[in-house]
Image: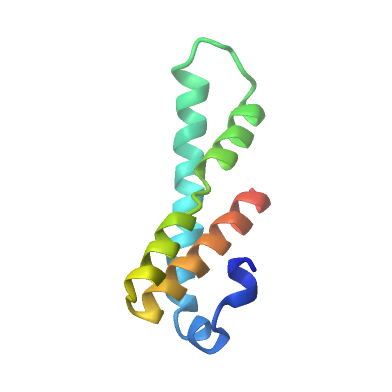
Length: 97
């Protein structure tokens, strides 16, 4: 099952504010920086909306390998849930943008 199906909801509620702080501004800033790079520095003369769309697609990270490694190493459940929640919110923020 995916991360959303196996996440501990009680622990997720405790770290929700941290996940929002990591996911929301991070994706927005990375989208803007990637779009600015694509628009101003590459010689393709793409429209700004295309650069923003590509920036939103590229800025969402997916730490599947990191979460699997944390589970294998037996690290803190709080850290694992925080990374899972941040990853889910990254995807959601990227879709909204």
